[in-house]
Structure formats: structure tokens, C-alpha cells
Length: 430
Ligand code: IMP
Image (cartoon, rainbow, N blue to C red; front, top):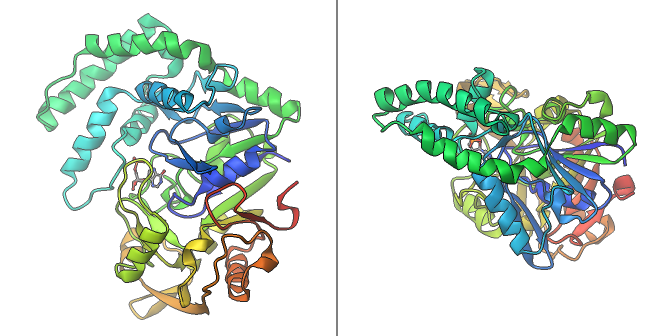
């Protein structure tokens, strides 16, 4: 297996974690490069559900080393609670199996607070963030006022950086939001308390990854969120604050694009979005309800109901070109069973014009009308299908249509949450 990046091809929640877990069977290292505990990566094994938010889901594979790399934003409080949860379920999260980058930025209590307060102020223009402090933490990173894991390991540096940050945040909290100021001593005591527990996990993960790649170890990058939530290329401003598309894997881990052997796009057989922002194929009717209930489309992090709708080939073509997918994994196709007709949006109509390219402007995207193509559905239970020929002809035609507009071959089709509820196509399983 060459180094592989697994990327979400929609607005997140494409069931990437199942794909990462499957490919993890052949990986030596699994890396998270961006995002933080805003993610919710669900893996189901023998009826047991494991939800990962910050820790790479490679942790489920005993021989795999998991890496939380430079570009991830880390809430230490959450780190320990997720670690404890996993350990309670029998998963070992030891410093030999999990490495945390010294360059990763820390999510601080004021980041969580400001995330919520700033959303509260955006009347009518809320992003619908997860409230985990992700945006404010990345904002501080860009403003050069962030605090990194390595800073926490040195009490004096940490205290200096905390005091400098709080001097500014407390003005914001008091004057803009009418909130009481935060006490530096309390935060310092809490965070310095985490330092001892974090220290054994902390590494120069760039160096670790370079050596691993030199030694031809199989490195799997697990992207969080989805390409349409990418800070630069998504539906801005209704995006997350990191690069969720393929390039985030390199920028956030200190590896070169030359190290990437393969890019796998994960596309759910229909579309969902959680939070605010344009969604041209959203079904606000019984279909949306049907997809939500059958697909259990409720946020793994916040529990919010996800907005649901048909596949969007306009967005799909855009995402496929942006990431240059080598292959695709199609997930949750079983959720479509029983629908008489399936629809795929092939173009947008706006002010009498037809758009075939994905617009950069959300105002346009908010007003477009999707133009649909119809395909026949199927009624057979496909959850037992293990090869392509086990699928009804109409399901295969639907998959072929996806390959056409995504210009990439499908290597994996998921027909249920369990590991074995999978169809491997062609060279998909090596
Ligand atoms: P934030 O990442 O919490 O700042 O939220 C920004 C936007 O990204 C919101 O619309 C969130 O719902 C969305 N978002 C963040 N993480 C995920 C995810 O893992 N899956 C789906 N949507 C996400």
C-alpha cells in the first residue's frame, strides 16, 4: 500500500471512518492532520460502536501507530476523556501507540467560550459550529497568538503566552460580549495539570513520519470533515477552519505531496450537511426525513439532525477535480434501498442560466435550482452483497453514474456499518 489520503467528498459525515478502519488493516501509521474534536468518526465492529473525535481511528488496529499531527487543534481536556472512554472499551491508548505533535495548537477555555459567544452574535448568519472552539483556536494560530503543545511543556513559556492571550481575550469577553473575565491562575492550574499526562505522548511527529516514510512504512492519512467544508475551497463562510481537502494531509503533518501515493475520496450515496450554509439538493420534505431516519443521520459530535438530500454531481465534479481522486469509496448505498426513483443533480439553474460548474459565491449557491436526472432504484436487500454482481442492475448503474461524474473508479462500496458489509472492487483490497 502506498501512502494513502482518505478525503471526505461532501460536507463531512461521509462515513470516512469505516473506510479508514478498513484500510487501517494494512497500515502501519494512521495520521490526523487537521481539525480537532469537532469530528465524529464512527466505526462499528461486531455491533459495538466506537466514536472517535480527536484520536485517529487507527487506534482500533493493534499494530497501528496513531499520530495527531501538527495541524490538529487539541483540547487536552477532551484528549483525556476520549482516551479514558476508549480504554474503558478495551482499546489501549499508550504513548507507544499514540503520538501527539509538539507543534499542535491547544484549544483553550476561551476558544470554546468565544466560539459560542460569537455564534450567538451572528443573528441570521450563524455558521452552526460544533462549539468546540475550533475556529477561535485556528484564528489565534494565524494571528500568532496561539499556544502550542510544546509551550505547555514549559511552565514559564506557557504562563507568558497565556497571560498575553488573556490580556486580549478578557477585553473581548468583557467589552464585546459582557461576559466576566477569565482567571489566568485557574486556567494555568488546569492546563499545567494536563502537562504531565500529555508529556509521554508528545513527539516531533514530523520527524517520526519522515522516518516512517523513509522506511517504507504504510502511512494512512485520515482527513476530518469534508472538502466542501475546506476553509479555502469550501462553501465559505459556511466551512470549518482547516483544509479538509487532500492538501490538509501534507500541510498539517509536515509531509510532502511527493509522499502521497493515492487519494481516495469517500462519497456517501446521498448528501448530508450539518450546520448552516447552502445545500442545493437538500430535501426538506418526506424524502429528507426518510434519508435521515434510515441513514441515522444525526451528528456524531453534537447529535444535531443532519440535513439530507440527493447526490450533487456539480459539487461532485468540483470536489473530484480539486482532490484529483485516484479512487472512490461509496458508503451507505443500502440506505437508498426501497426508493423507487433516485435523482442526481447534474446542473444548476439560476436566473435563466444553466451552471455546470460549482460557484465560488455562496449567494449564487443559495439561489440555484438543481436540475435532476432520474435513475431507477431497487427494492432488494443489498446488505449481504459482497461482490459487485450481487447488487441489482439498477444499483450498479447508479454506481457507474457516480464513477462518470467523479471521473474516478470505485474501489469500495459499503452496504452496512460492519467491516464485512463491504464490496471490494478491482485492486481495492491488496
Ligand atoms: P466548526 O468546525 O465547529 O467550526 O464548525 C464549522 C462547520 O463545520 C459547521 O457547519 C459544522 O457543523 C461543520 N462541521 C465541523 N466538523 C464537522 C464534521 O466532522 N462533520 C460534519 N460537519 C462538521
